[in-house]
Amino acid sequence: MSRRVVIDSLAFASEGGSLQGELQVVLLTRLLDLLTDSTGSLVYRVAGRIGQRNRPELLVEVDGVLSLRCQRCLEALEYPLELRSLLEFVDSDGDLTQEELEDDSRDFLPLQKELDVAGLIEDEILLALPIVPRHADCVLPGAVREEAASSPFLVLAGLKGRH
Image 1: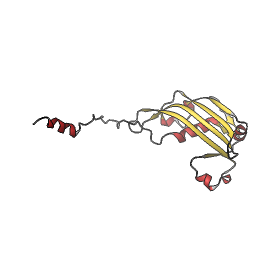
Image 2 (image 1 turned 120 degrees about the horizontal axis):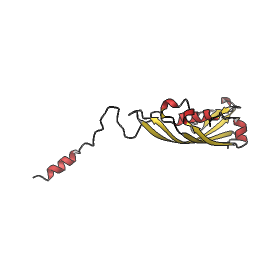
Image 3 (image 1 turned 45 degrees about the horizontal axis):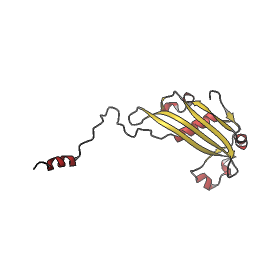
Image 4 (image 1 turned 135 degrees about the vertical axis):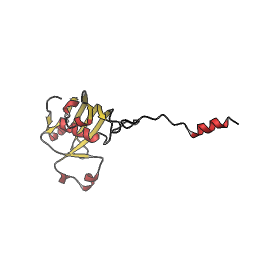
């Protein structure tokens, strides 16, 4: 997606619109500071529909791999992105009940005549990323990885054979 794609959120959902393609990582400017490498692309799909509550909805799916910076060792961390977001559109915050506002399982967006699809995808990616990305097993910069210490029970087992 090199050119800006803009949709009317109500019309797109009502007509059951669908967009799909690739989005170059380098175009996600708000994301670049978190990455060690901005090459490559992400595959996306955006589909509109009218949901169960008779509200327009947008399903956003993004797949790919991002090269984040591990916050422990500061090296590259390959992060597989498998994003699935269902967004309900509302006229305004006044249209939501208190229960809906407190429900964390659903996300709401105001209806927009000009919704920037790449901007929406970037927003959803930023919300989906870990707050502190890090490898499952790494050490601080400058630290030496210690080999597994011998178990005190192994020492005892060695002594048991000597009478």
